[in-house]
Image 1 (tube, rainbow, N blue to C red):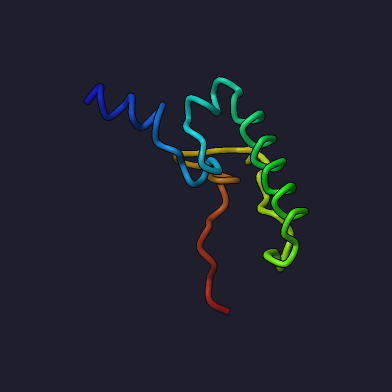
Image 2 (tube, rainbow, N blue to C red; image 1 turned 60 degrees about the horizontal axis):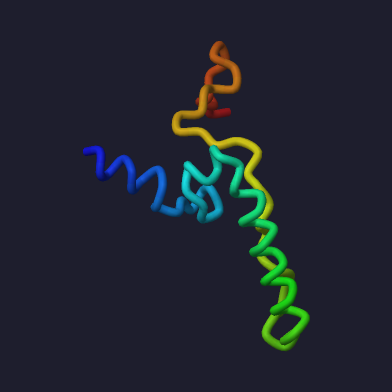
Length: 83
């Protein structure tokens, strides 16, 4: 189990964390990683604009990451009644 936990937190790049590990995010390394990616994509687009039909990928940081997001208002039902 320890091997899996280490892999998951330190090696596995999470899609919802824009492909950084939880450890990189927790340690603040994600900011430098995203800045580097943005620079690489920008340079690639400038070098070969014919390969790009849109803007570069959005490498901005997610503002929140949840495993189990709490309900916005616990007293409010999330189910809608049919009209």
